[in-house]
Length: 229
Image (cartoon, rainbow, N blue to C red; front, side):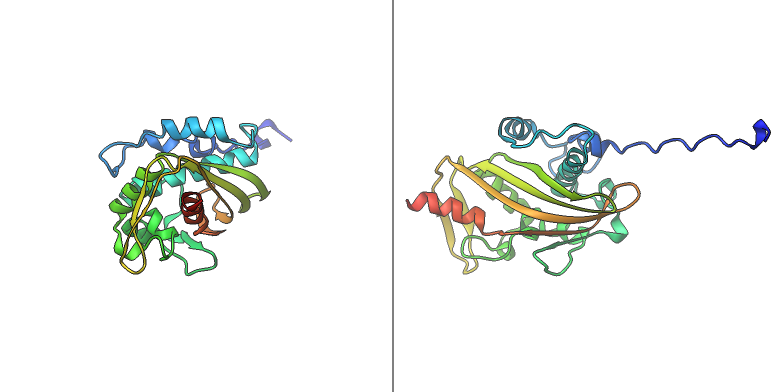
């Protein structure tokens, strides 16, 4: 066999930066919700101080964790779908607890909180627009850190368990499913929820079909329960 017959190896595919850096997409030129990239510094500090897992940087749990954190930044703060890098737009959908799949366009229109939280005795997404929902929840809980606890399968179908936590620093002021104004006094304690997500990803490890299961009322029960003790 001559040297000409020997083909050089294919170069290794570059790992997307949104898998290795939780803040990768914040450096993008994009149409941001408030005119500039958000500041997650307090949330990142809270994550470092409150996490229960210490995944090696190149491990699958760490990569999944970074992917979801970058997706959350894009879904919450990038106002133009063309700027989202963490999803495969034509094949993307998001569903909660076996409900109807939602498109990225729908999430952009109603906002992440309204896309995830169902109407209930404490909150009604139909009565609050996207901007108002962000003010309600971020005003009540300035940071809401997130971590991957366990990953059960790797690409192209990634199943994992996660934890979301923060502190109720200020009063919760919202509108419920009856149109009533609701106020829950701040208790300063921790609020924590957990759930399971199964995410289909493409060859570039961009999100396609995303299915999540969790109890969306657990956060409100913790807010109200501590207040009523």
